Length: 112
Image (tube, rainbow, N blue to C red):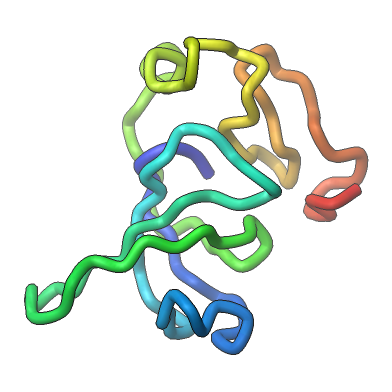
């Protein structure tokens, strides 16, 4: 998962009450970095009746639906200070920065 990917919320709604996010709701990752093992995701009402909702969602509570076509170079341009050390994507269960450094020791255990 990375910047602009389409994702599905698969977590427990009760943990995200303040964001009013529903299980199986579809959103997009809208920030290139990962903070506190979370992506910032926007959920847009397809009927444009309700306002967009922005939520910091833990990685383990998201499922990749569709990959964006954005490249690592484009992600780097959008990172604060264009620093490749910032955590910015998830591949094969690992949080990676753009240098390929793994930020968790055990795949899919994002807090390891």
